[in-house]
Image 1 (cartoon, rainbow, N blue to C red):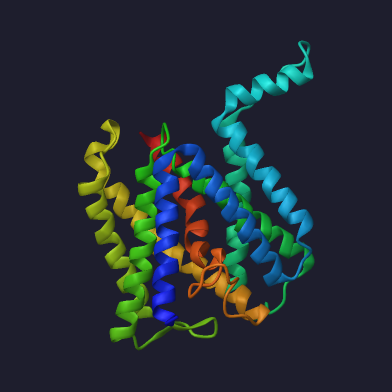
Image 2: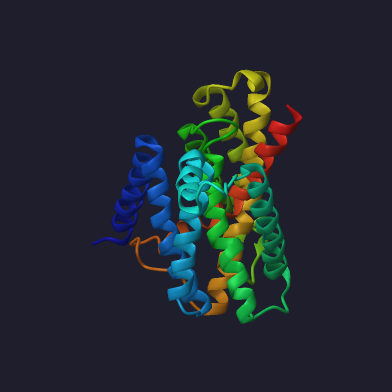
Length: 296
């Protein structure tokens, strides 16, 4: 089969699966990204060469536990309290849990950025491999689920909007870079990325954010006057930090000496290759939503 056709078919299947799971129900969305997490964990373990059994078990258990606690709080508390008995009651504070998880994720994100730009780092210690696994892979998948709930309830338009911004940034960064790109962005990590492409991707993502706010998202009553500012800001976050997330994964692959994180998507590579931008962006968008909620 022609490589371009193969890439187009696998890309279309990926997008259809993604949109169907997001739009069908909260549970199908959570389940699909649980599967994506397992595959991404497997791929990351291959990249950094660590044993897969414990990471897969821990990642699955941790993801499931946090989702149950976060979005099925009453049922989870009742179930656990039934096990603990009448004399011991468990009260789960979701806000405190979110703060702790967010701080851990952001600290590891900073470590990942240092890892990217520090030329002296060309190998990864065993401890760092597990730290990256937690904060670069597992926790961001949880925040992808969390941001889909916005300020209140599950809203598929939020996560679809975010993916549109990521795809817009990637597409126009490639097109602009190929057309007029002359200055390399980070040649030692990703030789094809250019500064012109990076700027072009961000600009078109911001324009897409404007269109999303006007044509797709029904602004929340509390933020109706600020919808454009909110979505153009999210677009800026997606463009800048999505590119950084892509570059970080590229450095992991360069150290491992491989082109793709996996082969599950013909012509596209692995799940991690498709989600490297959004998993780095998700915690920052979640932080932005929390700040937005606080100042409102």
